[in-house]
Image (cartoon, rainbow, N blue to C red; front, side, top):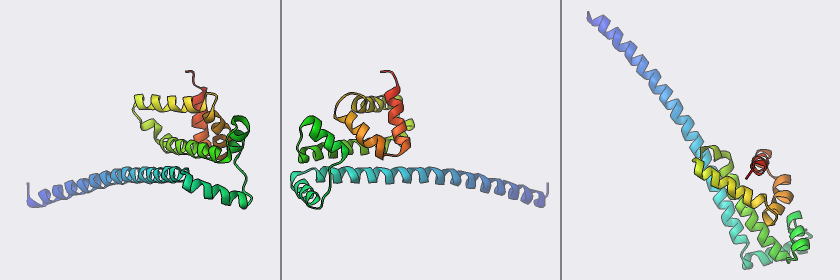
Length: 167
């Protein structure tokens, strides 16, 4: 074998290595984009939960409710139902709403990635969804008056499918 043949084989092997490296990098970029998307979603969800928790504190909530009332704001359908059916005050109804919304934001952050959960965590997550929104109570009222009418259809469909499953 002469040096030209050895050089040609080296060039072919180098080209193959470049293509393998490019394929590997493409897969890595895809995984990185998915992880960044998940991280942004998680950060958003944590921020929303923190804001909801802070807003539910008395020193934050009272001035907010007072300003809303002065500016003609009306309670949500969920809050109105809590005041009418459970006898809660406007402030109490708002606190229940904020807590329900915080739980929903937690679940909303999990729903797009639920298929990636281990089976035991998926079962526990679905059980929590079923327990919160499938039984009479605050969760069911929140589902009917808020989630079903305001949330993304994919999230609503997920909850609907979980509730349709036998216990």
